[in-house]
Image 1 (cartoon, one colour):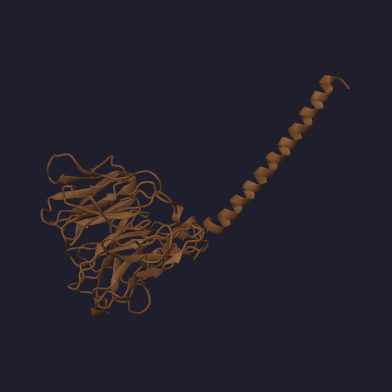
Image 2: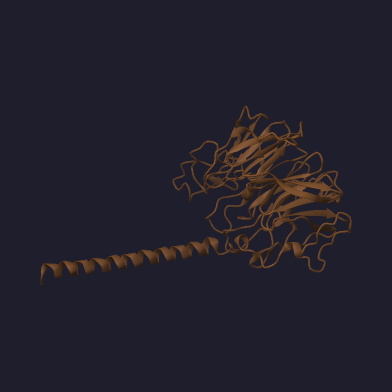
Length: 416
């Protein structure tokens, strides 16, 4: 056999080997991808797919004067307790997230993925106009009005906090830089009872040891951005904050890590206290060590702060609010906690897609079991919407933003 023939034979054998190993690697990748999908993503459809029905055609539009359609009326997909009703307050607001009412009774709304903050002007209980006032922003999420000077609006983008003097041509003025990039991009603002401005900064990852010391923490600052200092840490993704009106403490919803199965770790509501460490990335639930992330147990969970409330993993808790003492809601609801479950994306059987109620005693402890307040956004393998923020308006009604359906709902109590 000639030298050329021998070389050709060797080349042919090598190519067959390469093809074999290439196919083997491809088969392994497909098998792993299928396993990963089956374990973590087979319930993703409601979160990402467009529903077959438009919820604005199923839930009545708020008239501002006529009685609202009550629970379980014909064509109503959402379930509420007896005596409550729901309507579409505003629509055509894709990616609607955080709401804030100003001193004139108008609503400011962040549309995070749209890069905008909108103003909804309200007259006689209805939306008279809605316009994006601030555009071209980098994932704006948190909005807050200065409690002393309500003309000043604060906006938290992914990479900074700015303020604006409303009803003027003055541009946004940056008061603080924030870390950006990585996983969680929402930054949430809240003025505390102490007058300081608080900001929540999520982690850059699902689970990791952060390189930037500002990630997975809550910071507070003066209104001009000075004295920017750490308040609490070990908080993977506390997307929403609220003040308990009885105790004046800041409460926060917290999303647990992914890829540990359908039911681990639980989601949380935490009562934030200065200097506390809430455990992430090494601990979850009642100080259970994450052996998957830290198999050598290099970090102890001793001394970490457990959650105030723990509930179903992957519910994706977002907005939270306390039922006002002066509302016209039934007495048993007063000062109770409402939490919006945005809904799972990485659970084999979808969960969430609802608003739940936790009955609280005067000390803020949960009494009894979690109760559904508004449910049925999840219908089979589709979601008609995904509730985000919860705010009581100056009219005493509860307003709910929905970033999937692009609407704002209005919920009120009409009596039995």
